[in-house]
Image 1 (cartoon, one colour):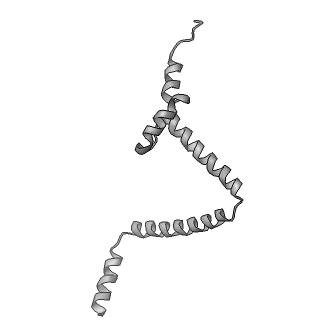
Image 2 (cartoon, helix red, strand yellow; image 1 turned 45 degrees about the horizontal axis):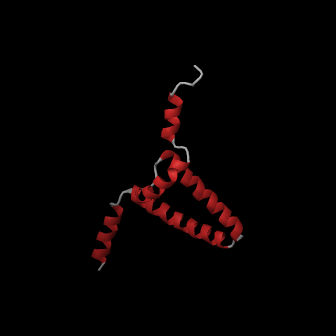
Image 3 (cartoon, helix red, strand yellow; image 1 turned 90 degrees about the vertical axis):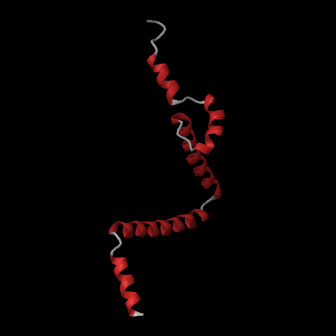
Length: 101
C-alpha cells in the first residue's frame, strides 16, 4: 500500500506549479463569491435592483454600441440596435464633410 502512496505523491510533484496556482485562485474565488452572495442576500432589495439594473443596462448598451454581444443574443440586439447609436454609424458620420463647407 505504501508503494501506491509514494507513486501518487511523485505524480503530484510532477504537476506544474501553474496548475496549483490556478486551482488555488479558483478556490479563493469561490470562497469570495459565496461571501459576496451572502452579503447581497442581506441588502435592501430596492438598492440591489437598482445596482443590477445599472449593471445590465451598461452591459447592454455596450453590446449595442460595440456589437460584441454573445451569439445567442444577436437576434434580440438586432431588434433593439436601430434605436440606439452604434460605433459603425458614428464612424461613418464622422467621415462625411459638414454640409456648410
